Every structure is written in structure tokens, then in C-alpha cells.
Length: 371
Image 1: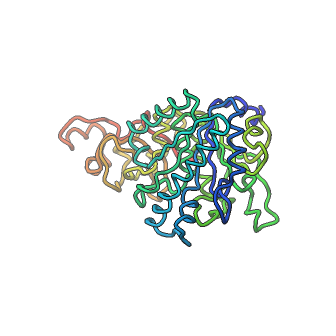
Image 2 (image 1 turned 90 degrees about the vertical axis):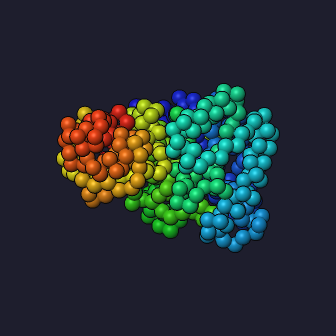
Image 3 (image 1 turned 45 degrees about the vertical axis):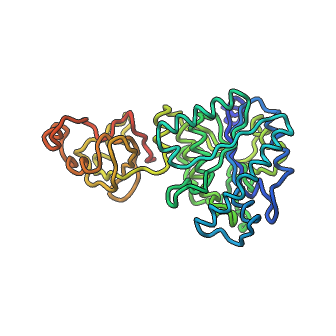
């Protein structure tokens, strides 16, 4: 099977645009790129959702600030730059007969299941009307330590939220290399990454003063999308007609081949940004969870609990060595799990004083994350 030819069937595409693509290094926005990008969207049949960086870049130069190395300065720069960024997007899209819509998101928006669904419904309504959603993190109000950290992660979350057929990262690099090609002349291009390939050693550092991304973050975000059944392409945003050519099946950039798709609820569990706590399990429980047929997490295999969570929260399941095995919706609070850890399911009513679920995390509400 030609894996590239499958991309021609995509009917909904999320495109993430990095700061170094949308903006000039020492100036404002790259108007030539924006114009060519909007033209390509207008020529395409698939619905396009844009996740863009660039607000901090614009704001830093408008204030002006030499550095944005604190949360408050970054938020101030974003507050100044975001309206300007959206103004340019709206005008350029309009020049090509398109309407743009701004959506600013926080981790709390995506981690709350009801808000997550409302966001998806809003995007669905916009796309049905032919509008191009332009999405960014709401840096101005995001709380330190509870952010997407970079728009690469946000793009993967958005792609799963809107059930995209393809996620494209437009970078200042042609794709993934075995080393940073800017400093290593022996670096080799990696055209395809498949599930199970070990590529973490290829990652480089972030790209610039306003960037919190870099290849390491793109790889992590691509893994998230792949695990949710969405293929990913990392390509050079400076290539002529880059979107048209990728969606025509041309071999631009690095293709990350997707796994089998997950159900929508499991996609949300897999991409929720900040789990409320951790449940530590023994080797027997780990083996049961990663078995081919899968298993629910039972109290008998739990050895410790970390964090303060309530029933219905998303938690990670880890080994004693800290390896993440799974994440899922927990049926008990952290205090209750501490009471029943190591116990057999039949003992739970006696320990807690009420009848509860046999499973601490049911397999239907769990996503395996271990390889």
C-alpha cells in the first residue's frame, strides 16, 4: 500500500504553523507565506483547521521586549500580539474569499469533557459554514504549569478533538533528520516513521526566543496523534504549494504512519493534558494491562497512589520505576484507592462501607500508553 496516497483521501486537515514560518526573524509576519497559505486553502476541497503560533513574536516586538523569559512577560506579549495576529489572518483569508474565526483555548477547556465536546461542536458548525477556524492557546490567562507548553501539543489535541484525517506541521525544516542538519552535515533525512520506531534520539532543541517547540515537541505531538489514529506530516512551510502537494500524495516531509483509530472517548482520555494523579501498579498488574486482550485495573495490583483526585478524573497508571503504562477514568477518589490498594475486589464494600465498582479503572475507559 502506498501510504502517501492515503493522504489524498483526507477530508479534514489540521495545519499547525510555527513561529519561524509565519513570522520574519527580525520583523513582523511573513505576508508572502500567509498569502500563499490562504490561496492554497481556497483551492483545496478538504476542510482546514489552523493552529498558529506567532502572537508572542508580534507582541514582543510591539512592546518592545528583548526577552519573554517570565510567565507575566509572555502573557503580556501574547495579549498585545494576538489581536494583531488574527487581524492579519482574517484579512489574508478574506483576500481569497474565505472567512476566518478565532478560537483561543486553555488546558482547562480541553480537560473538561463537557467543554471539550462544546468546542468540537463549535468547530463543526464553523466548518459546515465554510469558515476557517484559527486556533491558538490563550496564553494571557493560562496558568503557569497548566498549559499546552507549546502549540505542537495543542495541534495534536485539536486534531483528535475535531476527528481530523491528517495533521500537518509546517516547520522551518524539511522534516525529521537523524541529527540537527543545521549543525551536523552527516544528518540523514527520515522519510517515514511507523508505530514502534525509536526516533526520540533524533530530536533537536527549540527553534527560537518565542518558540517553546522544536523537533522533540513535534515528535511527542506526532506520537499522540498517531496513537489516536491520525497520520502526521512534518514539512517545510517554505516549500511552494506545500499543502497542495502533501494532499496530492507527494513525498514532502516526514510521514508518521497512524495506528488503528481509537473511539472518541478514548481519544479524549489519551490527549487530556494534565492527569489529576498517578496510580502505581505491580508487575502483575502491568502485564495484565498490556496483554493482547487487555484488562481493567483492579485494586489488588495497586501498590501506591500519588496526587489528589476524585472519581471520574483522568489518572495515569505507572510502574514503580515510573514508566507510564496507561491512563484512564478512575472510579474512586485518591483516598479511597489508598484504602483499597492491594485488596481483592470482593473486599471493597467491606473496606469502604459501600458497594462500588470492581474495577478501579475499567478497560473501556482506559488507553494503553506503554509500547
